[in-house]
Image (tube, rainbow, N blue to C red):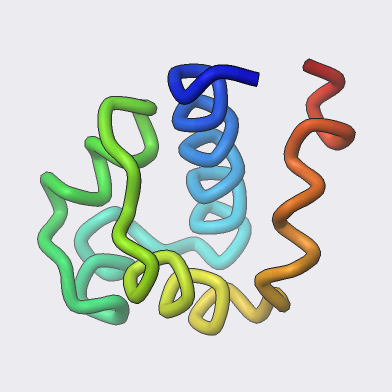
Length: 77
């Protein structure tokens, strides 16, 4: 899987989880120490989060990081 697909899949998953918590991009950004624009860039697949941002996202959204490695099987790509 190439980087572009990974960015898109990861962004979709983060957006889905954020919405399941009824968080706005602004609220999630505050909780993981990035701004709303950075959240939007990640969710749209335009950028990768840093490792620390990714871990903070998983903790904030109550998911163990290893579970998220299954992006490929979750989205069948």
